[in-house]
Image: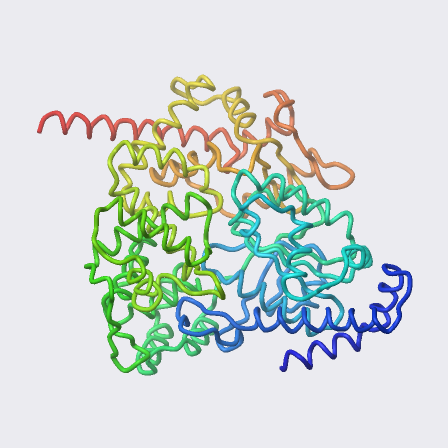
Amino acid sequence: MDEGKIAAEFISSNLDKIWQLGKRAFGSIDETVQIKLKTAYSEYLQNTREKYSKSKSFFIRNQAVDLYDYYIPTGIYSGTQSIPIPKFNSCLDYSNRIVITGTGGSGKSVLMRHLFLDCMSQKKYVPILIELRDLNSGKSSLEDYIVETLDLYGFDVSGSYVEKAKKEGHFCFFLDGYDEVDHSLRKNLIKQILKSSEKFKNCPIFISSRPDDVFNGIERFSVFRMQPLDLESASNLISKLPFDQEIKYKFIGALSDGLFEKHESFLSNPLLLSIMLLTYGENAEIPSKLSIFYNQAYEALFQRHDANKGGYSRSRKSELDIQDFSRVFSLFALQTYDRRIFKMPRVDCLQFIEKAKASLKKEFKSDDYLSDLLSAACLLIEDGLEIAFSHRSFQEYFVALHISCASPEIQERLINRYWKNMTSDNVINLLLEINPDLVERVLITPKLKDLFSEIGVRDKVGITHAVKYMQRAYESITLDEEKIYATYPGTEANICAIIHMAVYICETYSFPEDDYFEDNHRWLLERHGSKDGEIKLKTESVTYKTPLMADILNSRGAFSIGYLQAAYDAYKILKRKNESAIDSLGKV
């Protein structure tokens, strides 16, 4: 629809409310104030709709296209509650406080834009979309940045009007990308979100993020997960992508003939599905590792013809070969990742390229290399006046790639610097795929050694060891009517992430069937249930004699003594493996 028509309809539907707010904010509502308010709403609604209804993507880079040219409705779910085709009102019917979580490439940001546009179409709330990564500078609070965003898009009205409008529930906040906020800022950001939630109870709030346990402890917010694509929606997405029609037809046929079912864990993710289309026909087998997916995508982007342009080959200005081009981009990715930068002005982008160029002692023009990143290799895209990664996952892959090839001292320093980001990105998991021995030797074995030494395990894990571990790893354990979950002492990954990684690598623990957890959860509730259906244990105050804690530890699952024993068994396996590798080197 025409942006001007949408703005006019919104203003018309909310005119009485706007005049009343204006009267309270300015004391009177004369013609001058009316014109000012109408202009502010019209400018803001037109500008934001124009921005968020069009975008570039992994496949569509040269120009921004309408969101609905490639948008495929992706359902969200929370426990037994499911919203198959999310719309603004259907989400609001469930809760006006919603967190939408999903892995990288699952379509969270596209869904947030869809909900933003749908909110505007409903004409009840003024939608405000905040890309939370913009708070990484630390210069603005969330409330200040909301005002700055309104002002940026033309809502030129005094702060008193905005404040009264927020209290009246006139706005809806879409807070996109909590996981892209620097860890040092997240605790304060959550406090600000909760403060706004309490202060402006009638303003709906939507948050998007990769999965994070911090949301378990936020009351009033309902946590939904992105549903994976099914065969039909995967085929629909492929049909919408700008790619060679014959290749798309064959790929959709292969999906229907069993390819999707065989590799559903990969192909149900929109980004990975798109990458597979990019490499389809070149690779007969779908890789079992995520890192190989990104490597194949990079090779396809760097070397192969443009399948949407009849075989047209994009020339590169920098004239670097595929390996040197990758090495430069890996250093570029590392610099930006270290600063939690995902989008930047062109001048900053060129400075990062210059630093990578100087470090590697390569000869090329930084402008040429940037041009190649944007037009030939397409690893970056222009987003308005700034430059962003075509997808954040590529940044993570190239950081992992750089670490895997760095000198031993650099490897150790970077791994110890970045492993606590494991709750919000895939750098360490990708590195584990690329160079498992490195991660096991530098990260997992030393961390587990420190843990088991600290809690006093020598051979067999007992209940007192398990209690000490719970106190170190978790802040609280909560049992409610749906699940049992933990909250963590901070916003970063802790020893739990290392425990899970070790158990997974060494396959030292077998989880029981889902029926066991349902029965055990029901039994725990009946045995220890409270009147409000929720029990919360602060781990600092529990002992092995605390009845609920004892029952949890003696059950099965990730909170059990058996699971901690499995981690200790994994530690011994990895320790022996590392010692054997050292002995073998000594004999060479």
